[in-house]
Image (tube, rainbow, N blue to C red; front, side, top):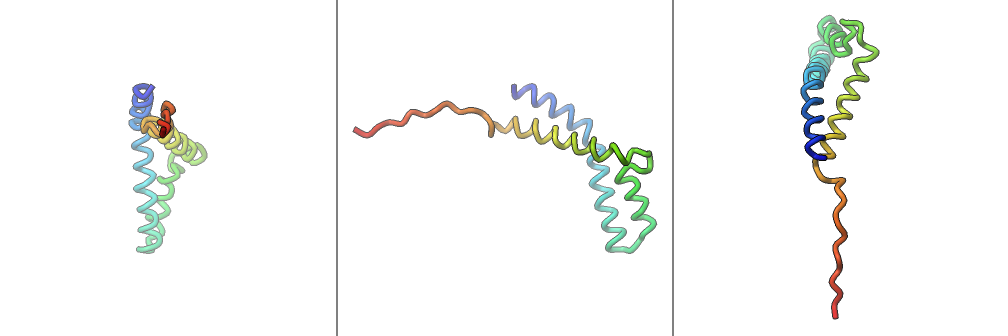
Length: 95
C-alpha cells in the first residue's frame, strides 16, 4: 500500500511543484514590492500572476493548487505510518 502512495505522491509532486513555486514566489514578491518598497505597479503585476488572472484562470487556479496540496498531504501522511494499525500488545501480569 505504501508503494502505491509513493507512486501517487511522486506523480502529484511533479505536477504540482511548478504552480506552487510560482504561487509562493509571487506571493512573497507581492508583499515585498507592495508593503516594503511601495512599488504598486510591480505588485499589481505580481498579483495578476499569483492568481493566474493574467491567463484568465483566477477562478480555478486556487482550487487546483488546494487540491494538489491536499493530495500531497494525504499521500505524504499515509506514508509516515502514523495511521497504521499496530497489533495489541499483551500485558504480562505480575504473579
